[in-house]
Every structure is written in structure tokens, then in C-alpha cells.
Length: 209
Ligand SMILES: [Zn+2]
Image (cartoon, helix red, strand yellow):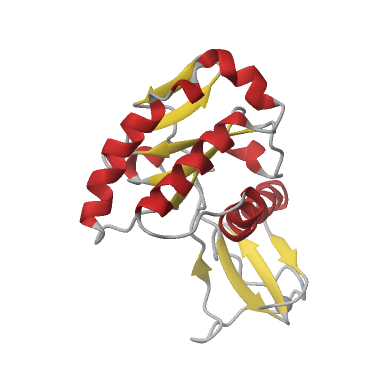
């Protein structure tokens, strides 16, 4: 997904293309004249280099970003970046610390840059948390019974940090619904539009918004 998706509105529809060199609207075939309010905008790719996003939850797929379309617990793999971009993730062989491999994933930043103290403790706590016997490799299979192990590891850490910050923890459903699903839906839409444009040269979505 190297190309930039461009979106514009015409005849009440959202039109997606890779370039605006086409002079006619692919929906109504009328010539295009853009004014300021309907000028084409470049869409931001929902995938980022997770090693460059500090203190974040990273959502990747074992099969690559184009497979992130649907929310399937079994196919996603999540990790947590520290302030230096090292990615901690729970796998069959225990907690791994990846210096590479998370270059294209959905990144949800959890600790803003201005919370310097929290950031400093984030790294320390993540290191300590990852070493807990709870995340030993032999426990991975047991954990699997409850769904995705890597997700449980990440969410338990996020809740640990929330409690250190004097805030209430989030249930799995709360966290998924408020933080993860909206981002995954946006990524999923981006992927399907991208593929349609790749195939047909454009993509038309019903009603403009
Ligand atoms: Zn049109």
C-alpha cells in the first residue's frame, strides 16, 4: 500500500482515486471543477511504523497489514512499544522484545509526550511486567482458552499503568469498543477502498459525509 488515496466529493458521493488527473467524475461522468470546499484531500494511511511510535499499543497481523481488515482475535497479533520503539509482545515462546517487524501496523498511542514521568515509568514497568511468571511461555496455551494471549498481555499492562496513574482499569470489551474497534474499522475501510481503486482506478461510496 504505497500509493496515496485521494478523496473528493462529487454529485453527492465520495469518490476515491490515486490521482486527480482524470477530468471526469467516474460516477456521473460530468467534468470536474473543484472549489475550495470540495477540493480533493489525501487520506492518511492507517498503518504506521510501530517502532517510531513510543508507548503505544500496536496491532499487526501475522499475515501482514492487508489481513487486518476484519477483527479476528486469532489472526491479529498485538504488542506494546516502549519509549525507544522496542516492541514487547507475548508469544508461544514467552515475551519477545522486537527491534523490527512492526513496520506496518495500527498504532494506538497510550502515553502522550508531555507525560514525561509516566513515560519514564512506562519503560521501567514494561520491563518488570514482562518478566512476571504470568507470561511464561508454558502458560501461553492456558491463556489461549480465554482468547488472544497477546491481547491479554497488552491489556493487563495498560490497566496496570492506568492504576499507577490513579485511574480505573478498562474491561476487555470497554477497551476494544472504545480504542481498538474504531481504529480497526477505519483501517478495514481504507484497505477495501484501496483495493477497489487498485482494481478499477476509482471507488465510489454512496453518500458524502
Ligand atoms: Zn459526479
